[in-house]
Length: 388
Ligand SMILES: Cc1ncc(COP(=O)(O)O)c(C=O)c1O
Image 1 (tube, rainbow, N blue to C red):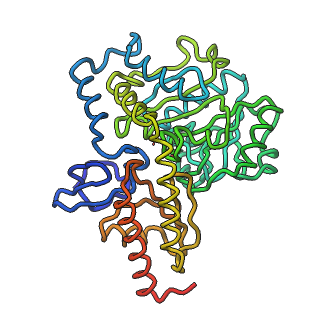
Image 2: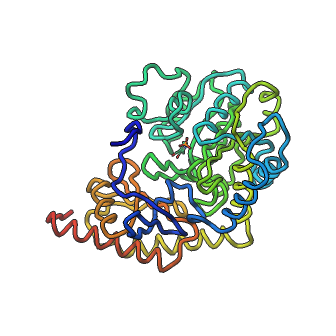
Image 3: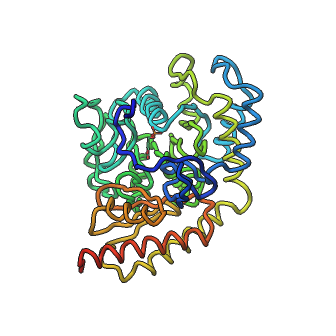
């Protein structure tokens, strides 16, 4: 008997503890964790420097409220600003709240309500970010959505042009659609989208909640395309498991988010801020992200090579360590087979298996993961007499 609302289809595993790329269950079995808490534990479980930063802050101050200046919160904001294209930060507790802040800011700053997001996008579960999400299944049963969103086809400029009107305040986009099936933005779409924003005076909101904090090999995935977004949202990896999100914005938007315009009791509280500082320090350490980028390329090349003869594998897409294997079989079948062999993976839609290893994963760990996926796929093919 569980006293929780059954909103999640939970695995039968009962997780006791984690270390690095590994999780251990209550009955003592070890699992290689390529879910990373759904793109959260980018530095692995219980990273010693993040743990130490949180312990220190626990002994100092937990909460006094955003009616006070906290040095630790200012420092976290400064580091985000210095590392990004933006000038100011609003802290939240989650990704969906960061996107709510972005939607409110874009509307207030422009005096317009209409926002164009993408089909198959995912931006969260609260009413505003759910309305921004371009997937009907997520919205079903929740009544009328905010009416002020249109949805363009991702990577399709004609569709984007069609969706934009004189009433449009902003374009809201993920650089890689993570939940939507691991679809990577094309360079030509990025370039044309920026040109359209300039031409029509639109704000560009980049949702980096899944792609940010090093997941794609850069701190922010927009860096791969040289973009200069007006608003950026982050969460997930920013706290490596401690709840924190943030909306970053350009100086030109500062007036619109003046006193009393928005708020959060907990957003950026000292525990969350101290954790984020430790995470950002690790991610920005000399050579860390270039090594992640290079390691991800080697991993994906090896993965593609090992799975090349397997008929159920249709496509492998990735940006850094955000990786999708599209299969001819349901993703949940492949995931269940891998779980039996001790590897934890996620779906991204019905036929895409998502791999989100911690950025700190070792070569022996990623080789083990590939061996498990290959074995699981091969056995599946044999047992189901599968041929392409
Ligand atoms: C791109 C993107 N935006 C927003 C969210 C929502 O974040 P949260 O679950 O922290 O509210 C997610 C979560 O998966 C996401 O991947």
